[in-house]
Image (cartoon, rainbow, N blue to C red; front, side):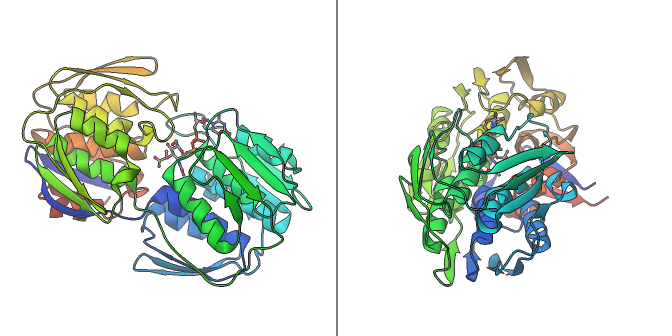
Length: 419
Ligand code: EPZ
């Protein structure tokens, strides 16, 4: 397994180009199953998870050409409706083909995604919504068997905010008969990007960006060739800005959008960062030791759970005590155990982590457990005195495009050890 070797303790500075958002590209790739029209997607990040989704789509009969972050894709007629366990187990977001396959082909056989490091991650709300739309759903031997001649629109009230649940149900509803209303819908920018893509395909969706989505079903989505540019990645943006804060440097992130991460920018300012921005760039400079911040994670526009681990790393070297409460996932503090190995003073009490800042972390051998945990270990390593070796770095390759090249350009001493 690849490792990252980082020698820390120096401020990072310079400019980093932000890639397209993994969590926008994944549902939009799944949505191409809904149309036979050719689709061109730009700003698609080259990541493990994108490669996994493309592998799954090609098994379903989708043809594509991918190069220089541009994807030409055509799902003229899916030749299969099976999403096998071997693929789904490596990427839970594979569940996103369930809604489109059911809507387009009237059938889908999708492996139940197992849990992952951060939690059980059930998909009961996806299935409950599809049943309400008239699908016959059976779960047998670890597979979801879904059938529906044609889904029928209805009013859905989601018991809790679910990002991919909202996305799956919205994709199912666009070809249903009649109107579907999804209440308590997720408002994440990636859900909005998917909705805007579906409208380009010819879907009729209103309330985009709000927690009430209204979808008027249509008979087909074949309005002709469609072109879409994937939304910039707000979590990658927040991660690199936090790299500037934790190393007391100055970094400008470009090809991004400031309005996507207000809650994160507010917390970084509270930690003492000076932040300026333009329409598509954000610059953070930290000239003194950060102050500890407290927050709880929440659905958008609240503080994103995908930035919780990164801000915990910042709290580890900050002045004071920061209290973090994780309200979305039941086990998203795995990074705390590894940060402690670097000298962090973190006490875990259920869904709350109490971080007492220390003056310096020390480099140490650590192990990544999930995508954002590995990002927090990279940040801690950049700030720590000495050398850190991060194992199982495949986790980070799932969501951060060309991470060592981007970090090296900012002045980091980082090397990938291939094993
Ligand atoms: C999406 O996961 C993201 N993944 C996650 O990003 C992100 O952390 C999460 O949303 C929250 O923002 C993608 O978009 C591909 P949820 P998702 O359904 O949709 C519970 C990353 O790092 N729930 O919004 O799986 C669930 O257990 C990844 O890029 C049910 O109980 O998350 C969780 O507690 C990690 N039943 C809460 O809802 C369901 O049917 C929110 O989960 C669905 C969800």
